[in-house]
Image (tube, rainbow, N blue to C red; front, side, top):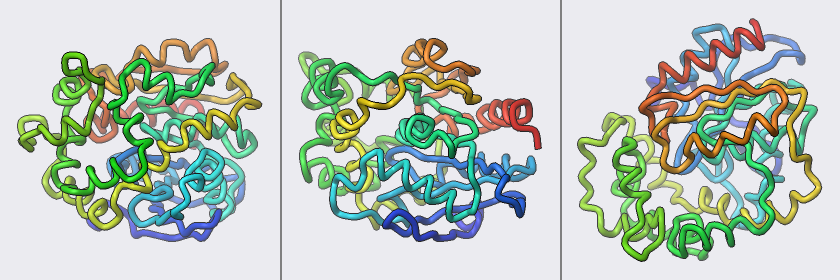
Length: 327
């Protein structure tokens, strides 16, 4: 990890000590606009290693945190300490620590959910948003967990995650196997998304128990890269990340007063053609909800787009940044 990531730094903020990685030229002014890269589950700041280098090489100031409960950023035991108020508050606290007013926030997977909420909850701290795979979604009419349970079944992984302790123990029992199961190319993930006859969609508990552990030919990470994730989650377990999912209902309950549109803010949405979890179709509604939106799709990529197709992601991000936020 030390060969591809900048030195780790730490900031005490919002009741935690956040680990983050910083690269590129850091202007000595509070009007500077860093790019903050926000990872998903089960990931780390390390997931952005290709983008950190490309952005820094292009003269961009870039920061990638291990977010609350992940990697080198420990989180509290209380499940409600992982709700959207805390997750967005951590990123605002990071800006305060860096002594800057606004940032361009980039989010993938769960990180995408968080960065799309930032303009609604902290509009004065956001200069722009890039969503990778994760679309901006309107507030659902009912509890999203109830929707997922009804649509995908009781064993769908997000519904399964609501049960205290079960998923935590199952995923941590063999971290090597768990990470190999998740970190695979789109063909394997698409197969995993298909329900057994009469069963739930995305039933990862059963899939993990039944899978023979054969990582080939679906690997896209080297053994060294995969080892970074395995080592990190062996040390921390998965509870911190799973607790983000355990706040779906709480976040929904507390979001009733938020705006339903994003206007006056440059936004970029990058979808992945073969993402079975966050499909391109899920982003089709976004032009009706965001006033200043540009959209692109990465061909032949699955869910882990910034790692599967780093060159294409870097090209799209830098092209948009150069046009909307010139150095």
